[in-house]
Image 1 (cartoon, rainbow, N blue to C red):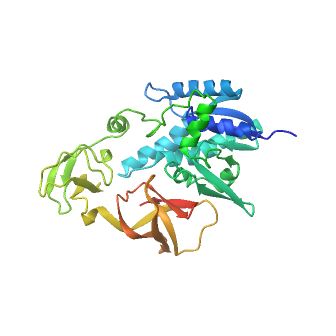
Image 2 (image 1 turned 45 degrees about the vertical axis):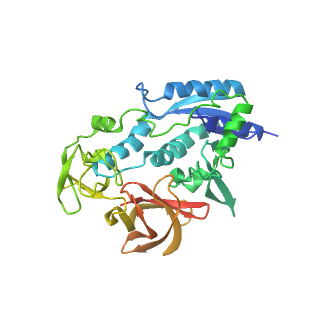
Image 3 (image 1 turned 60 degrees about the horizontal axis):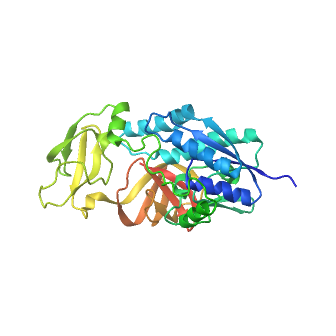
Amino acid sequence: MIKKRVVLGMSGGVDSSVAAVLLQKEGYEVVAVFMRNWADDGICTAADDYMDVAKVCSQLNIKYFTVNFEKEYRDRVFSYFLSEYKKGRTPNPDVMCNTEIKFKAFLEYALNFDCDYIAMGHYARTKKIDSRTYLLKGKDNNKDQSYFLSRVKEEALAKTLFPVGDLEKSEVRKIAEEYNLSTALKKDSTGICFIGERDFNEFLDKFLLTKPGNIVDEHGKVLGKHTGLIHYTIGQRRGMGIGGVGSGEPFFVAGKDLEKNELIVAQGEKNPILYKKIFEVEDIFWINDPPKLPREFCVKIRYRTKDEPCHLIYENDKYIVNLKNPLKGVTPGQVAVFYSEDICLGSGIIK
């Protein structure tokens, strides 16, 4: 019997390392590919990560390759990231990276290996029902990454295996230790890959013009100066330098006025201006067939927030999310992901 071939995207982390082990155990022929998405500028950890891929592949006797997607990443992900910041919004480049690079450019590249599937180390699952492929949350609620896959096409998911999706993170670490993998104790990477550990605002300032302006309260009263609207995100508490005013409670970013170049803030965690019960989403994307609306779902307004009951309505060419409970930090540019229990249905971009 001919072994089925899987092309595994390996990042140099423990999750994709254990994915390789699990695929081998299931009898697949594994080919590993390391994606180079950003020019190594001394901050990006690509060189170290590649060495970790090489070590694990040598341990498991797996062939490994490198593919350079720097151009695709700049054209499809980084340019989007910058254009959203220019509009005063806060994008999620990790969602776009999955959509455009890992499950599009990488999938196209992997098919050159005459493979049956691709595989990734994401904490997510797929389920086939009547020849359709559905995206499910990963078993580990704390690590579930279906949020980041909410704009990946069903055709790509049908060709994808998620070997660690049925495991808790602790189980993944345990397997890595059992197999004595060099990545067993490696820390999880956090933050945006191309920014790494460097100062976020300094990084943005290299690519976008910043213009200082006034910080105002909801009544237009000037409270201080901001360093450039791109440096702030909705719901942000720190870094404004306007404490000790009024009630003494902390201030939070409530909005941005791009025309006046003003940062609007509100005082106090319970300030109603910080909360939204209704918001609009655009660029809606459904993984499977579009559901009939209006309908009740659960929605996540950012990664690691809990599922919130909502009613999604389509009227006057607009998709309106009506939340059961008002939420703080509904941020334009972020991704609102819709769920029906464990099934990830798709997402829209908060307008």
